[in-house]
Image 1 (cartoon, helix red, strand yellow):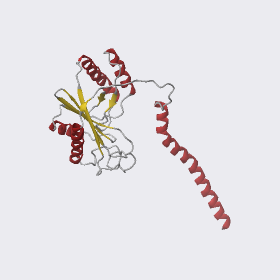
Image 2: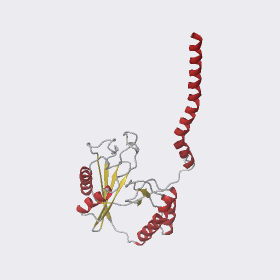
Image 3: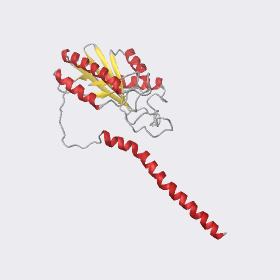
Image 4: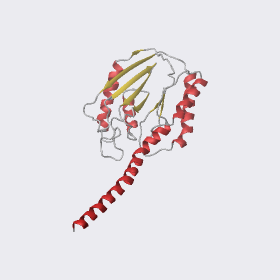
Length: 247
């Protein structure tokens, strides 16, 4: 699994070509399967992905090369999910709550924190990772699910609150620590298995249909104006003529 992020810059939807590149690069190093994860863990303005693609590809290639040369060791995994009752959809917290996955390899412990939300306020990731260091973790990462269940619920410029915009950071961190501690208690030695299948002839919404859907509201508004204005003008003219006849 390779999480991609650009923090403290905005980490939003990354081009699909990145996933294709990573999987092809993984096979070069004898890695048969690789999962590309968009972290969605920092929102702070606009980022031109054309300018960041090469650096992301270089980082991915380096990680894959080091992974292929690293010796395999037994490891433990623990996971836990909590549902904070004091956070709502309007606050930016989705129904999936907070999930923590803890991995222990030798003397090192790693933690993944997955928050059911639509991105993360820039800078909050670093606060969360700092709290993980206090619990003895070597490394960690924070991700959001990019859920849209929190969208269109608030009258804000974005139409939603990213995690941390209205949610108090200290309370959120305490919930995360709670999930982490539960995950640690559940750790056990595990084995990894995977299976890759190809489902043929699956129809999906591609780039062009999505672009058409995005401009549909604007086109509908323009068409409505073209229809309503003549009708409204004609109605006024008939009304004026009717009043003149009555006079």
